[in-house]
Length: 402
Ligand SMILES: C[S@@+](CC[C@H](N)C(=O)[O-])C[C@H]1O[C@@H](n2cnc3c(N)ncnc32)[C@H](O)[C@@H]1O
Image (cartoon, rainbow, N blue to C red; front, side):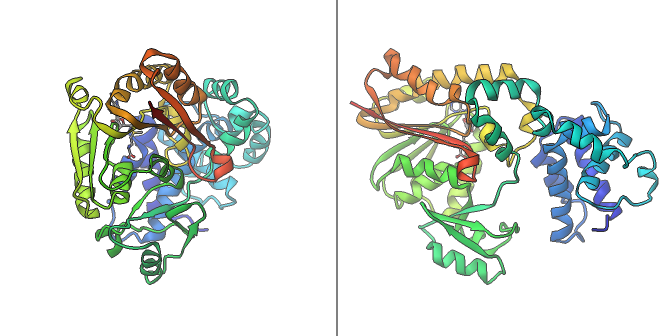
């Protein structure tokens, strides 16, 4: 592979924003990719994938390159050199690479990967926490979470069948395969920009990981029901739920951020969905109004996001142990408070995109042991691990109210 100057520079600029300016990787890349209209899809994927790779492997590469934060521009080039050398790419003789020794990279790599926290490129505290919580599973799980995520779509049955969507994409040279056990999913055989397709503009599909598609499946909403999606965000699950209800009944999508709910409304319009009502949670009033009124409530709780490291590798560098502690307090409060919206005989689904038992099964166990959970019983729970499923790590528990 030949390296092109403007693509490498765009990658270095993106890394600078992510590492030194503490900006979110997906937002930084969205901006960088707007920079030059002449870039084709290969150029764009080079910038995006190289940036994500270097973010993912930051600790390992920094150890090999012997550089420390904050990274100067020459140090960002050293990180890039480690990436390129390990990929077997020849380093060009540009002045930016003059100071970057390539000879010792392979030897230092062999030495570094003897230590798991370096090999998997994670902070020491996270390695300790993962081992404490998952024991032997952690080794395989963190390795799987360091793999690049595959792209999975969810067909919107209000607009198209899976077959119709597959054919429409095939006409655009985008090959997909169906996934056993995920009735609306199509997995892309190769990465492609699906957002520019006519099918996307017409609301035929959303991009949604296979594990995430399990959440609405477990909730099992039926036409005519009233469902509360209490942490709806931009609506990934709400849209899925509403589509399964065939636009009949009501989905009340709540969140504490209006901008996310606005995005949800935009997506609902594209999806041809009319039965979602968004409600901003500004105080406990919004919850009190709904106490005992929902057939089913989904708490897709804010979490550490450790199950989705494949697609958000910068989470490794952004979260701190205190954040995980605080988010667990929030999860406990949400379970106690939002479960009150379930009517008698109704159901509650608690889900996270984390693989830590302390955010998952232990939260549910704690809830069931408290007064707030006294009327509930556990029907089923799924611990979805990336190393077993091949998709995101998730947790989904279904609870029944007496
Ligand atoms: C895991 S994300 C939800 C993702 C969303 N359900 C989806 O499928 O796209 C968790 C959401 O909880 C929201 N949140 C955080 N604290 C909350 C609270 N106290 N009450 C309700 N939502 C909250 C966040 O804004 C975020 O959108």
